[in-house]
Image: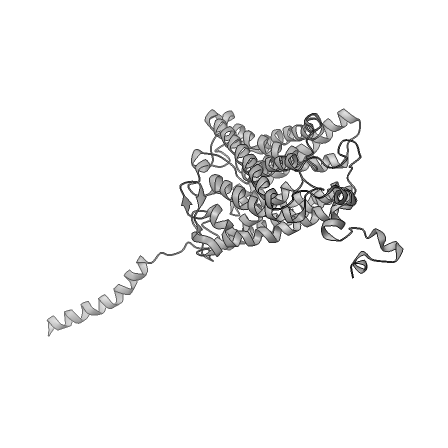
Length: 451
């Protein structure tokens, strides 16, 4: 009787314990932090706002007959890259590594990308939140390139080029620098929010595109002044505002590092606006609103890779240098070399991003971010070497790949508008619209003439 009683007790305990053991073996997903999640989603929204801001920034700088074409390029990129990112772009950029070069297609169509966190990238926010945040970077990077070939590229060619460029240049480069086991990340490259992945890649690619397409008709002999500077300043203001999400959001957590990135972002932008205006004032006798707007963007570009690794004092130096460097690039270098970088995407983003990446190797400090590294001024010259190597790789890869993509697209689709269409303006010839409805005064809307 006693023996049977013991057996009953053991069976009962087993029934109670076994389910508990089974539950213990199941992987328990990390807890989601509501504050971090809200912060990342808000940051993603801020970064998305930057692309319409860029559309206004670029739109105000072109001639009146091309303003809608430039705005359309930025706006349609949101749709094109958003779909590409869900289908396969995110998986290629951040998916499980294949030989340190590209992500696998395990996450294509956002398979295995759900509401639980992914501890490799963001342990306290849903994987979908991190994916959405990174999407906004891919969008604006493709849009930045349009500033170099504004006023002369056919819209069908633009769509094909943008899709191929995002898939073949941005996605692999993002994996190299940010993806788990990406080879530049393993090398020790520091790029907190996109100096190489976003700004150098887009700026260098824009330069290549401007050279391949050739200069605008009348460039150097006809005035090509901005048609609406208030629009440009509004765009620059939205960029400055959104950039806090760009850089501070890259901490992927509402923490002290995000606060540090926020402060240095504003500081560098302010310093660069001051230095651009100062050098312009000294050279031409007058400070311009366009110079102030361009200077703040140059500072934002330069601080981007360094924003999670440097102090506010370092940010002042980075911004001051960026303002002078980018001003000289767009006012002196472009004139001497003769290339037509329409809206100075290369001068601001290509060279500003290069300076920022190198400056990270100078000013980075583990006192700011223990997950980073010290730079040259903190006793680690090797980090500067790594940054220079990363810059060189980005220049070479983005430039060569862009050249090849444009040549291949050109085999099947004409890249540049005809001379007559360029003279008439891309708004009317590519999109059948006018920004300011100049013919309304005659009593006939353009849309009515299309009927």
